[in-house]
Length: 291
Length: 252
Image (cartoon, chains in turn cyan, green):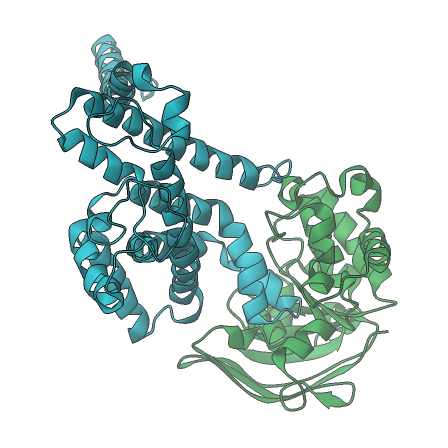
């Protein structure tokens, strides 16, 4: 009994080996996860950086046969499309998430909404493009930035809804009770206390959805359509970076291939910058010791 | 000023579980009333009926009447209105984690649409002083999160938050059970001071605590109020055998 807590030498060696093996496996997995991302970045830099110049950011595409030109209209177009998509997808997504977590949690409607959101998340993006084509483009009889934004916005909804719901459910019940016990109406408590407490996670969900649709090409093929010229009009076809990359990459010209690489590099860079910017702005006010 | 509460034939259920049976109890104004009893006897359910928090649970139900002053809180006013007049402090400190100390205390007023900065500053200072927390936090009111304080400070912050909306009654559901002895002593001192301004109902597992802070004590058992009398009488000469068994530690 006195040696109950002592282990044999063999036992200790086995433990050391097992410990190192488990740590090694974890490190290896981490490398495997990060490696493709870094590889993509390096490859994009290698292929695309040389084609980046001032013209790329300030000019619109040159006609076939002419050298030079840029993707300024596509960058602005992507910005407009994402603005339309976000102003549609984020409010609807968050509101639906609030309904699922706070008001209709156990209702039949909530189950139906959850199921729909999960299915919607799995719908191929090309199908989303075709649906919006028949819903908006056909009735209006022309391609438009608006329809592209709507397609992307609908794609954002399920991700945002489900993450908002999960994050709200993680807010401790005690926090909700504290607000109600102060004589705060339920709706006010949900918006000002529960949602605010869950906001870091909700913002992450929005950024995830945003970054995902920022690179989508398929839903824009039949909606935003693409545009070789400047257009800020929501009612007209509009250029977008993924579309421009798609068109240039499929072309037979070497210069266009190089521009496509540069476009891909800029697209990824812009996504990283905009997500970091939102992160920075929304975490700036966080207090010492806040959890 | 505090207000007296008259509870008549109060019954409460969780789905089919009859948690409170015909409770009749007068709670005097500007005194501390302690509720003791073993776990699951209905003390917490009872205080949650006094500010209508019981009904926030979807499977809960309640009947009977609770009169506060001259209003029946189940007939005459909305639950939101009741909770503005009846503050509550929970067993575990529950500050709003993303808010500063100042915002925590101001939350009750702000969320009800109150915006006047000067008055908010005054109320926050007064409430924190009343909760004996002002001197410890006055330097970083807006810099630190409520969640960054120690457990005992968090509980006093929650008391300050409840006091800031100027209630007439303060319900405390085992306010010191998650705290160390020093913080517990501070909370008890606080209850002593607050009695002059508020009617206090305190649920406690600690019988010495009931004896120290409360004028009157009620003993709950299996959802019934077994005995309600002056604290002195309950602890020295209880009228019911079950009360005596409980306070002498024979069960519970």
